[in-house]
Image 1 (tube, rainbow, N blue to C red):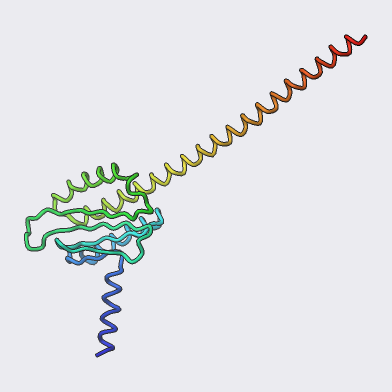
Image 2 (spheres, rainbow, N blue to C red):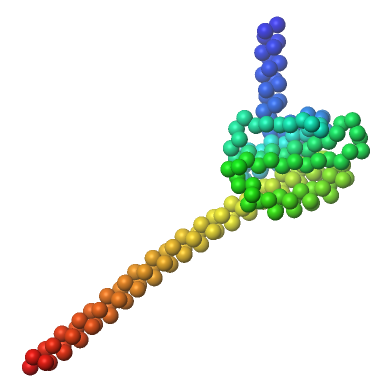
Length: 187
């Protein structure tokens, strides 16, 4: 009995901690393989964890590790067949979701078009790819701003050194002229 409980717990925890959790049974095995490849590409490209869940209304999903995590929940009321699909994106605070809010809103608006067509595979794959592009673009932007900031700092240092040499050169010329004037006066 204890062995069955242990095996059941291991299987359940493996399912609950996976990257794609199809609790509503929406995706076929082929669909899951395609989505797993898309999620894997997202994780390799961005370095962030990604969790895709199909949930019923009033269900939730939590992750053990809250760092660098993106959770995509596709929520639908199972009792009402004609209910619309709700898309929920949760992004951990260390990924600065505030900076991405306008892009995320645009992405969710675009996903709503596919949600009305009731093709959850297309909605999920488009959202994962869209989020991937969004995070890659944000990382590139941050890298460019750091580079320009470093170039700006380097330019300031260069101008400071150049100005110092210019002031020293002017001072040396002034001292030489005074020396020459002093010698002429002494004669």
